[in-house]
Image 1: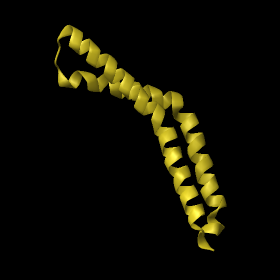
Image 2: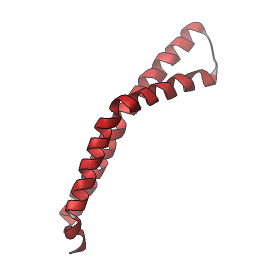
Image 3: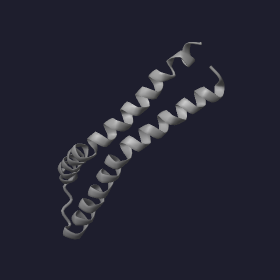
Image 4: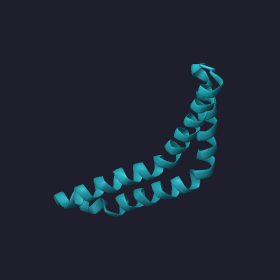
Length: 89
């Protein structure tokens, strides 16, 4: 197992993690920003007000992006299992 191969697999792992978690994090960020602007304009300073819409948005995003995320995770896992002989040898 060469150092280049290890770095390549680690790079693919980090890229896959960012690719999978990115849409949900962006969705939570946008909903949080909208709620923050709403709180600032209405002067409602309730801390728990932002949690419920973010949770609902992430769950809806998970339902929407779930199959796509699963496909990417399975592809990465399939690549790992295909290269299993390179890990041992």
